[in-house]
Length: 109
Image (tube, rainbow, N blue to C red; front, side, top):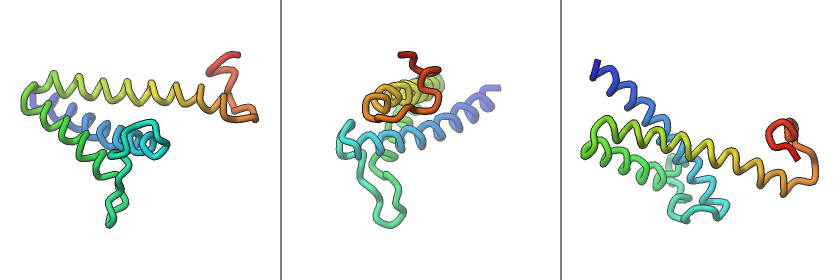
């Protein structure tokens, strides 16, 4: 059962690292995150610095804190992504003159 939990959390953590690195890249390009996250690999076109930073954090947590650290990191990444997505609605609402579809449902006036 422990091996199954470890494989499950590792897979979840890897997908979160990939998603969070893309989010970090997009925020960095917009000037909302440190510039180092916006470096693109010349051959593959991926945000390699963001992937390296997030992967290093996940690797360090897996070595020093075990499965509980990986679960905490995966939950933090997911919460961070959801929080930034919710905050993006506020920014979009201020920046656009047009009404957004579903705007009143998600963020009532």
